[in-house]
Length: 257
Image (cartoon, rainbow, N blue to C red; front, side):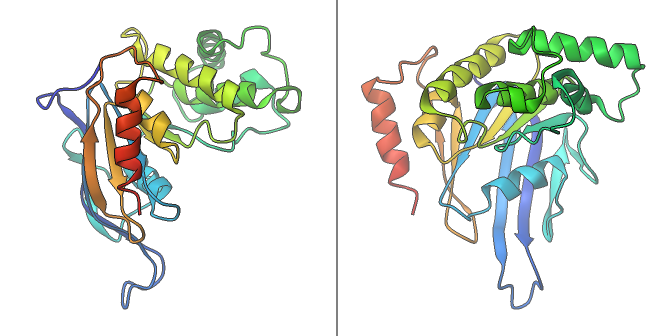
């Protein structure tokens, strides 16, 4: 489902700069002059050193944070608030311990104009798609890390977002669980009957980025700027042990300084 250069732009950052504290003398500039577009049917990963603004970039893209300079456009219209067509999966699961699985998933429909019965139906459908049937009444304390992240993914998918943002979604999981969940995400991504139209993922794992992505954006150290954009043209399904994967991992790792 890789995007072509003629695929429509879903979201675009133009000249985005983000700073914390006074802009002059700008001691805490996190991102500087970011120009980035995400196209339909594209899986984009963002990599870079710690503290370079990767997670901040996702929040700006969704409208959860405002840049000090530059603009964000969604379908060529300036984004002035939180984009309802995007959802985010967090590294730390972000589940409410006093809510069960289906209630946590229903939070993804908070504020949506659906009756209670429709919200419950959509949440149960998302739970089924993510593979959590039978755990609807379970509480987060009763779930493994992988199952908690599945709940987070179901909550993000229940609103049928056009763009799915993922902030290091597998980093808190053990290697075997993260491998399985990566495959499940790719399986969902490959199904044209299911949302989203594009995925943007922040990760520290370059091998994960190469394996999953159509394009990798490499950020510099703070202030984060785009050092390179690397297209990943390996046909899918990909062999994670292939020489081409290893070559690209080495090449991109060498860009991160």
